[in-house]
Length: 133
Image (cartoon, rainbow, N blue to C red):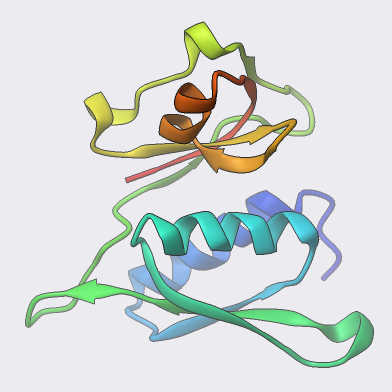
């Protein structure tokens, strides 16, 4: 399946895998999905990720994280903010706070993909890709 919106596709695959408690999920590899996976890993939302496959069939194998005996997913919600049809940008003064700082907003800035916290620290704004908590 060739999705035009690889970010939405990635978020949906992670969301669905979490709902049915899968240990891992595969996402088509792009520079963007790799960077988002890196941010999710740094923030502790996913265990790890690795690239599998060859050439055009390369995919990211994302290992999901659960807590407790009944395996509650660490990722409660993944919400796409900026869509191809409606881009959402935010300057450094108006960067969103997700659930008062409990969640993170993933921002695409001129200095790469980072969390709202990092963007605030570096004093840069950008495109608000998604919210995670």
